[in-house]
Length: 372
Image (cartoon, rainbow, N blue to C red; front, side, top):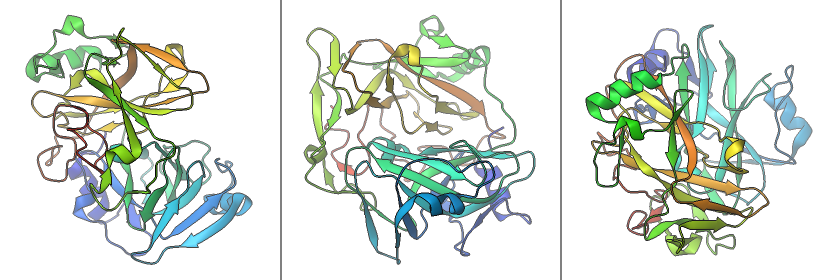
């Protein structure tokens, strides 16, 4: 089970906390989401010679000592600019002391995934990203690289989310069909629930198709953006400084440039049932040489009543690639939470993507109207 907001409070504020902080900076209730916890940046930024992982018998601090070429301390209120295509390691405020039956998984928040920022979690003595071993005790570090833009960050900023898992509880296609028959999981543009026979599933995953049948099908990142993207000043950035809109392709086929970064949207509008959460899973190389997402968590209640289009963060490899309207482009797996969260996505003012249509990141003015 994935721990819900109630379960997270239990392991944060209980007698034997499993989520702690480095310097007694208490975890804020605002960090607790329906099925995840927002994690905060610490006050050190390590500029690395290379991305990479510690060995199985090496702490992250020991690994940093072999690969760092610069280090900066951030005082409260000071900012740091991440240069494009440079790898940084930043310790997080939160540390873990998990029980032997729990592990943690991680994903960037959708707002930074939509900006071409590649972020992953590294932990001690572990040779894999974004997932701790069972019973992990120790610090967490953020490895972060901005592919396109200069990016401005400050200590205490939340860029990553964490889920605490007690056991694997993926929802089967049969269970998902029952959820859909009761309340609706996938909808079309008009807000009509799709017939289950129109769903595409594989290995208990829902497959999503690309939508090229709209006036603006997406956006291309401007590699020579004149401004620095601030990740802590709200909707302060002008869309045209960072993005070029992509109009509807005349023949239904869109050719994207190799090594470029793009935002596209799905035909399907998804609604996550209150009993479960979901995650976009790694791309299938059989679909093409590209990634389709950098932020994968979808919390209970996402999509409101009639679903929301999923935004795809597409990064191509070296070769140009052509997409056609309706092409399968990504998949989503659903997992049960230990209980229905007492706070659902979109039920308070902290949720940023509550409208049905696709949206640019929350850092941009007119982020929804520009897409329309």
